[in-house]
View 1: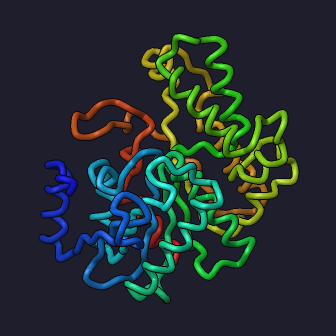
View 2: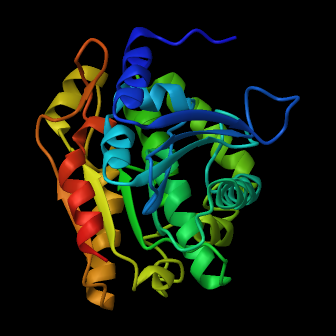
View 3: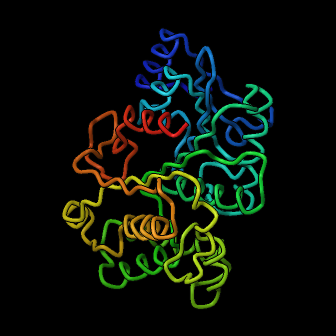
Length: 309
């Protein structure tokens, strides 16, 4: 049995003191590591939020890094934090993970009677990629559960840009701290896309939540009518010093700014790029990292979601 860290245990106690309830739900009783979700529920549910973790991030770790689920529950919003059937190393935009999103939502709807509740969809890093991809497919294919609003924290969206930036970093800065991570993701992307952008261009466009090279704006046209926020803290100087190499092509903010710009031009009146400064820190040691849940102003985000009703 996993032992909770002090931070998570503190949040667990706080949630109970507010009359909230934390539960772990397993879709497969024989699997305690994946195909599960954690919920933080209020006494009376007005809405619900699917909060998708980043790569190799557990629901418990999300609870350590952000107070958003606890604060949302105080406002009547149930939070669902999943680990998909594809596990902690989920690629987010792949078909099996996307199917797992649907299965978890279906289970939560039955378990918590969410039929008439507002649905908010959020995610961090690859979890944000997953969230936007799901929203686009949900509208395109008319899923039963379509989000009323989306918010994401610094996810990669254009996997052609993402792939090429990592290849470039390995070429110009082979000793960068990101070298091993880049090698892994290049291989992973090639596996998931069945090739490089040169050999599987159409697949990259089809699977990317947003693609600069897609002049037809195929994917994002489906979310023109959904309010969306993209949070990012593009501290380029810090990244250059800390990792040994960085430029704007390395920043996921490039994808987010392009997507939001195009959505606004397409007519989305609630598409926002939220740029932050010196808010990115990781718990428990307050370690500076701009790529973090903490760049969200939790209370202001909740107010924004409630203003959309």
